[in-house]
Image (cartoon, rainbow, N blue to C red; front, side):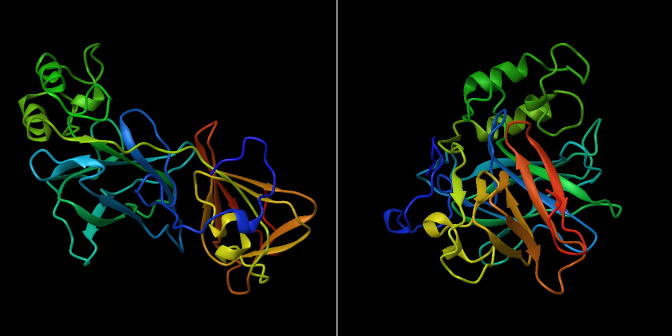
Length: 303
């Protein structure tokens, strides 16, 4: 839910439900370009965001051939020096899905790309960094062959791609979404990818973030206690988190929010044993940048 005039909702008026975004579970998702989902995370020296879950269902995807090809592009966010490896994906049972294509470094950048062919089911995406690099990253999920960014692959996409054969990075006719294998040029290989996905569509859309208020319902001061937040739901990377009561809130792990507001003397601190390398990831949805607000050794967030 979203409050246009932020106020603290009553706990009894807000039904409990799982943290989902249009059926696609994530810690954070924002829409851009032809992506039907985006996940933000971070890799640091002593911790990493623990991956993301996605669900492929017939109600959200038109699986023209029984499966859908999805491209997972990973890039560093503004100001980050992370060099992401190609994302990996596993089934709910833990089996690794062999990618149809995996590139740790696509043409002209350190961004990575992996293409997977998925049937209906639940999956988990993991991201790692190369060469010991650290920082914030974003994973963008797109339909392979969706060159016109309408979240469906049609014969129009196939024909448009064919008309751009030979286009290279730097050419006026080069379209990144049509360079499916990310080798820096549009070729018949890209056409083959698009043809295989022809007819696949998704109804997934990204919902605007909520404003989530701290109400302290659990009485333990723990950020990760669902009962401490309005609606009994933890804030995600698409949400505005507001802590507007005097007192101490303890963060004993890695959390991510779209924006954070500390008011009326609220203090964010860490629990013993989590003083070093602990981070709160704050995504400003307007600037679309990721900031890492590291907690100091005394535990007060530098926000």
